[in-house]
Every structure is written in structure tokens, then in C-alpha cells.
Image 1 (tube, rainbow, N blue to C red):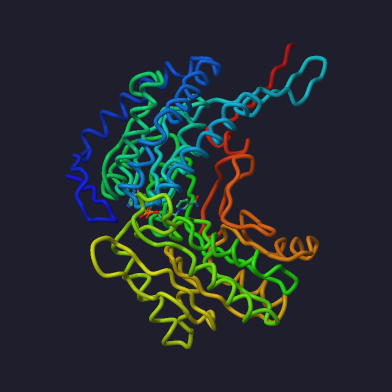
Image 2 (image 1 turned 45 degrees about the vertical axis):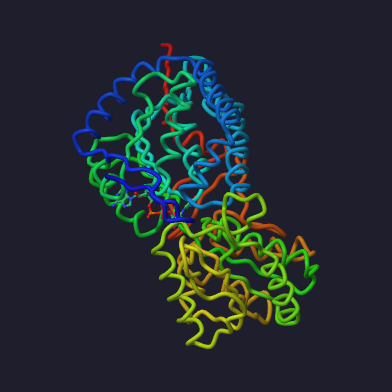
Length: 455
Ligand code: NAD
């Protein structure tokens, strides 16, 4: 039995039966049968159903936002914003799937035509994370369905009620029975799911779990995509407007309580402006309101998982023991709920875990650097490669720096940003494959190469 706990109050919200191996096998068989029919439907018909799903999400946004806030502790304004912006992602997929999957004649001779067509993968497994369940889920299951696949969707055990809401709305939107199957449970259920033969595995979660997923995918030799963690750096050059850069980076570090794969996790500041930048950054952080996530004026809610309190405490202690200055925060807040003080550390360096391992919480280290060369060296000095940002007035300088970094997304004067129009991918420990953009639509289809000789 899965117990769903509100991380802000520790009240039990629900107890839900987990799917066992037998239930997963029947759901997989049912979904596979449904997919054969679905692959025969027109894209226009599929778009109509997903369009209706989009309308239902908008109609029920407030109720779904309340559920999301209750189970993951995300401040209510951020829960509403996530659901609203999911509508924009759906718009992108609805407008661009036809073009991405249109057959292309790539060569003609008098008696020979070469053509590429796109076919669905078949049955795909989508094992997902809790931090942005609408975003990371819909990046996968929406293009998968539009491309003609069936989906076995396992939401995180920390976002199961949201998973149920998504499944209910897809059904109401008219998705054929069986095509989208909710698999309820924790990591053990996810592992059982991967015992089923599937035609693609799409995972969002931590690097540690990602390695297990890749091993399971190798056993059945199926396509696998992994969207994993990050240790996303930003570099602040000496020519910035301090207040603007500090406000942008504080937001990037603390939005969703720092529980974003692309949250800013490390800040490097040119030595000439180090002290004033840190002061401006602290001023912004002092303005954040921590507390009840159901209130409209709350900026920071609780951590979603209680275990993360110990991870953050350990990272902060390690940093302080190695010479970091604790400028604010530093510990869990006593009482009900998994709250943690927003924490800023200065005088950090790369001997400290806080500058190397993913924090995934409201903790940031700010390090002084001598010049662009040192900034590049330090930004590249982790095994992760999700995003990196540079703050400067000089576009050429930013681009020259960002070109040297092994990351999937490069930000100039911005951070913690995802666009449906751009591919979302990580390098190194941050993942394999990509979602979003037209490339991310094709991730759910396989090309067939046609060699057509008329005589
Ligand atoms: P997690 O790895 O703990 O769990 C992710 C999912 O995997 C959950 O559904 C879980 O039940 C399942 N799982 C766990 N063990 C499994 C196993 N052995 N076999 C199959 N499934 C298993 O991650 P999380 O705590 O849900 O999410 C946080 C992590 O996700 C962070 O590292 C974050 O950076 C990353 N993330 C990455 C992106 C991205 O787009 N790159 C987006 C969101 C989150």
C-alpha cells in the first residue's frame, strides 16, 4: 500500500494499492492490443483527443493545482503556473507533430525513389519524477500518444495523485481504453514494470536510478532515454547590473525550493564584484517567504521528501568544515512538515560536496573566480552536463564561454528555463537522448527507409 503524505503538514492524504507484477503484465497486454488500433487512427483524430485533454486541464486547473501542492508541497502559484505552461507545451506538440512525422522523399531518379516514413515505436514505458510531474510527464506521454504509441505511465510515488488526475482527464478526453495505463507504486514497481517487454523506456529521475534503468533496458535491448539530474552552474561577469543578475539567479536557485533539474546549483562570480553580488543575492533571498504552500504569497514550501533534509544538512556541514561561510539558513525547521531554511554559502570551493553533488533543495554555494578561464574550468568540473548560464552585457563573450561547456542547454542572462521549441537534453551524468522540440517528437517514432525501384 502506498501512503501519500502531505509534506507541509505530514497528514496522510491517501493510501493507494500498488500494482504488482501480475497487474502490470495485464496492463501491458491490454495497452499493446489498444496500440494496434491506435496506430491505425489519423493524426487529426489523435490531436482532437489531446486537444480536449488540454481543455480539461485548463478547466480543472485549480483543483489539479491544489492536488499538486498537497502532495509535493509546491507553492500554489507555482503549481498553477506549471499546469498553465503545460497547456503551452501541448500547443507545441499539437501544432508540430504533423510536420515532424511527415514522410520525406529524399532522392528520385527515373526508376528509383528513396523515402523516409515514421512509424510508432509501439508500447513505451514512462517512469517519471515528482518535481514537475505535469511538465516531465507530458514531455513524454503526449508526443508518444500523438505518434501512435501506447504508454505505461508510472508517476513518482510522490506524485501519484497527480498521475491519477492525468489518467482520468485523458480518459475523459476520449483516449481509447487501455492506451494509457497508470502504474502505481515506488521504485520496486518501476523495476517490475521494466520486466515487461516494451519498445521504448523513457525515464526522468536521478542519475543513480538512471543507471539501473539503462541496465534494465540493456537486458531487453530496447530504446532508452534518460533525463537525469544536474549541478547547473552560472557565471556572473563584472559588467552586469548586480541587482538584476542577483534577482534572476536567486529565483533560478530557489524556485520550486531548488527542486528543479535545471535549478542553479553553483554560482561563480568575477572577483571584482564578488562581495556586492553576494550582498545583492542575500537581499533577494531574505525577501523570500517560506511557509504554507497553499497561500498565494508563499515563495518556498517544504521539501517534498523528508530524506533530503539529511542530504542538505550533510552538504552544508561538509562545506562549513572545509571553510565555507554560512550566510543564511543551514538547517531543517523544527515542527510539522519537511521545511528547510533557504541557505546561502560563500567562500566555497570544489573540495566541498555542495559544489559537486546535486543538492536538489534550497541551498546554493557562491564561489569567487579570477577570470573567464577559471570560470570555464570550474563550470565544467562535475560529471553533470544539463545547463549552464553566463551573465554579462557582452553576448560574444557569453557565447564564447558557453561553447566550451559540455551541456545540453546554454543560457545567456537567464537560467532555469525550458522551452518546448528547443531540445531538452543532458550530457554526461545528466542523461541520454532528448525530449521537446521537433527532435523530441521524433524520439517517439522510428524511421523506415524505403528503396522503391519501379523497374
Ligand atoms: P528517482 O530516481 O528517485 O525516481 C524517479 C522514478 O524512478 C520514480 O518514479 C521512482 O519510483 C522510479 N524508480 C526508482 N527506482 C527504480 C528502479 N530500480 N527501477 C525502475 N524505476 C525506479 O528521482 P526523483 O526523486 O523522482 O526525481 C529527482 C531527480 O530527477 C533529480 O535528480 C532531478 O534532477 C531529476 N530530474 C531530471 C529532469 C530532467 O529533465 N533532466 C527533470 C526532472 C527531474
